[in-house]
Image (cartoon, rainbow, N blue to C red; front, side, top):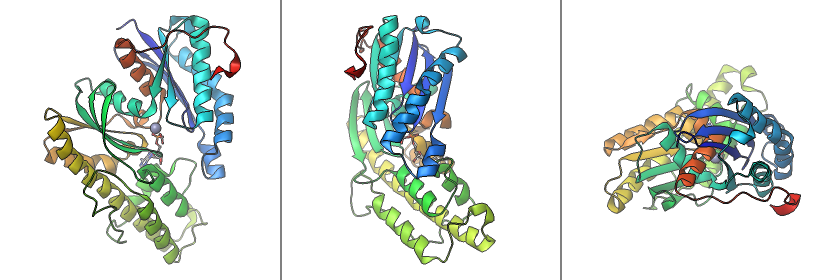
Length: 353
Ligand code: KG4
Ligand code: ZN
């Protein structure tokens, strides 16, 4: 396993990422190129523009990953690449690059599921983590509660019926007029520290549904209405806002965050109950995906998990948001089980993917 060296490529959304990981879990390099500036300028991800941005940097990002690891393509054992879910145009950029390298160096290729990668990267950072385990995967596009029984065997306990929690963070940040050159989540997390989380009364989603599904569309509407009802000018950047204006925005951010996370807590609590009925030997809840880099989220979920005598496993923030390491690692896990595709032909036509 130590001689195995896998390149992981991730282009499913707005980050172009590549990393090189050894079979024993050693991270040899990690590179992420973010489209945050583009996002701030246009207020969201436009697929065609995101594709362009990936195309512009993909070669550079992969080369940098190789350089940082002091390797060349010929040292690789296999190439892993995200094949979904995500934006088709963006995924293609990564897949084309992966096939190009695999084809020219005669390497096996491993297609990786983005959400599986978010979950499995926890097995790289926490070597004790054995199957079966539970995972709460929270990002901009997904909200999933799963029971991972074994590699490739996942039972879905809950999913969102509308928006994901990261989307609610991003919209709240946008409506509060926060600086979006970084994504909305961190901006809300920071501002919420100054606010009173009990000051605005938002209702917790899906109280009457005794399942493990999520909904954030209603909370988003509640937040939008609350912002509209206050007399604040959100076109003024936070740094120039009056102290009263700033306090109102912080109170909304904190109140939103409290309820958004309370919803996660309630669903996790029930999911643990369900999961233990299916797999009584479950000991861990993995929390991963971009929103899992939030400290408030981590500490609240840690309490839920402890109360149920389980252990929380959260990868470090840079491995929670989209990255190439999780793709390379998921490639390694699958490769070791014999799950990979043979090298593509070296001279395949451009439009095969
Ligand atoms: O996993 P990820 O990088 O990309 C997707 O697969 O969607 O997650 C991105 C999401 C964004 O919605 C972003 O606002 C959110 O994760 N996020 C956070 C934090 N950092 C990133 N949300 C709350 N608090 C954070 N600190
Ligand atoms: Zn993601």
